[in-house]
Amino acid sequence: MNIFSPGAFAGKRLLLTGGSSGIGAVVAEQAASLGMRVAFCGRNAEAGAGVAARCAGRGRFIRCDLTDPREITRFVEEAVDFLGGAADYLVNAAATDKRLTFDEVTPEAFSSFIDADLRPAVLVTRAALDALRKGDGKSIVNFGTTNWMLGLAPFTLYGAAKSGLLGFTRSLARELGREMIRVNMLSPGWIMTEKQLKLYVTEQDKKDLLRDQALPFLLTADEIVPPLFFLLSEGARGVTGQNLIIDGGKLME
Figure 1 (cartoon, rainbow, N blue to C red):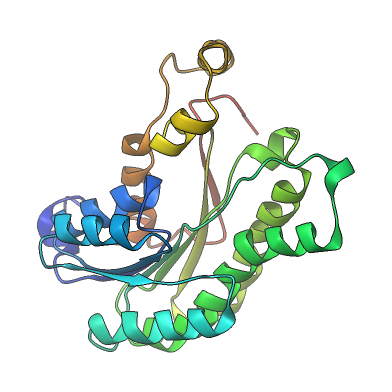
Figure 2: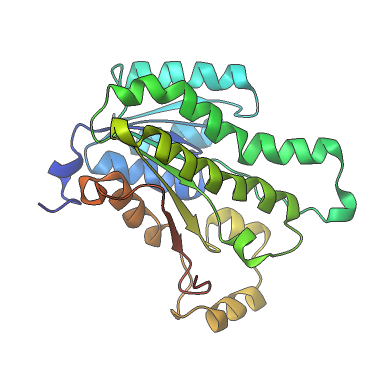
């Protein structure tokens, strides 16, 4: 069976955080093109509505502030209702990668990174667990980063929060494995999204990446989505508790 054929994913139900922009938006649109129903959240209502429109009737955008546990509960309830009472896949892609030196750290700043980059994945997964138990395939993928593995600055708080996702992923994989719910992590390197190109990436950064990667091209969401769908698919039926790094070969563990 070709796991990437429309028939392999037709009728599957995906719950997605961070789907209104960046990699998440590409995930939502590609999932819909393969026949999935997709319920996703984000903060930007205009951007989210645009992604939903490109999903051609298979996507539902739900505006949500994932730093608010009450909003998370509402999002999951509305998402599961759109998906018909069950979910086959959950992808926790929402994140923020703000730059902050350690000299600037305050208790409030630390909480803000946990609230944006770690706690939502835990709370969304817990809220969606009953729906996943009713689904087919039952695959969870949490989006990490290679940033903390490389020890980059000024990302100490971001790295602390994101690295926590790996412990969450592996422990949850063990806990839910007997129920045939798989839990994996996907860790991209520096991906050339619209936001990154607009706010952060310089021409020197591009040259440095091409020098340090094994593969001589800059990565985009097009390199992230197929491996993600593999982790969701029956092709990865025996894969759980793993961290798949996609960075063009910059970091080799």
